[in-house]
Length: 122
Image 1 (cartoon, one colour):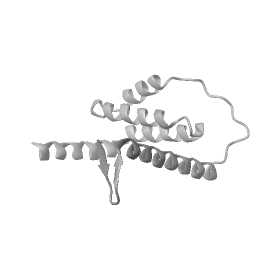
Image 2: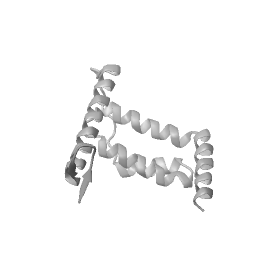
Image 3: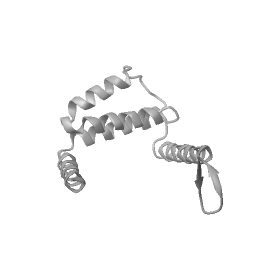
Image 4: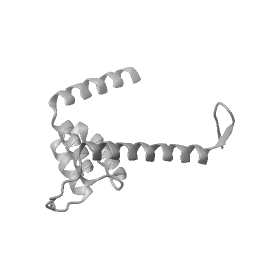
């Protein structure tokens, strides 16, 4: 199987590699920006350790039932990209998920959009 671009035919593996490199560069740039905005603290007391599954379980319990699949996807995305990021950056991403889950205005907008998509797909 091959993918055609403007200039030539490239392999699917080449296209996937290009996407991976682009994503890695985006993550690297995000980390550099984060480190510039939030330089590492010299005094860092450790936090209790917890598992990704425990985080997902707790965030899902805070979310309305219809948002649980979204919580699962968001936690999975943060987990997959956590390794090259500073711990504080990952923490910030987790807090954003928590804020979203607890934001009732977001619940209403998400439900409205979901309902509209359901009616247009019928």
